[in-house]
Amino acid sequence: MFRNMVSSLIQHGRIRTTTAKAKELRRFVDSTIAWGTSLGELIVTPKDKMTDEQKAKVVHHYRMARRMVPDRTLLTKLFTEIAPLYLNEQGKPTREGGYTRVVKGLNRRGDNAPMAVIELMDYNFATTAEVSTEESAE
Image (cartoon, rainbow, N blue to C red; front, side, top):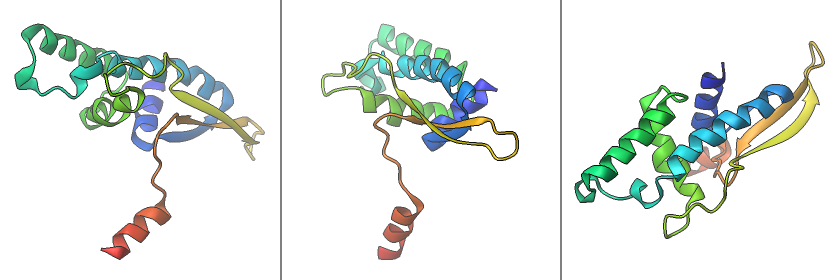
């Protein structure tokens, strides 16, 4: 269940779930994103300029993150879009964990379960209004 939730969070940037699941999901998401940020400047380095040891390190980090994100397109998004959000210009992490935020919401209507929204910190959410405005301008 948590593998699917991690994948959905990477794909959409935020998901709505129960508060207990959201708090537990933070552990998995933070460790998965940490595999991407720990590569540092190797994320943006072209493969032809890497040494064999650096290539092996990148492959290792991809494989470790793949344990939680089985989809290749989402894995690529994790390493190319999400992980660089938490790196500075020198390739050093800007934060030590805490890549997600849990915002509590109203209780679910059917069973009164406490609900929450878990979202990625510093993620740029494109709303449907912004996307439709950009498409109509073209």
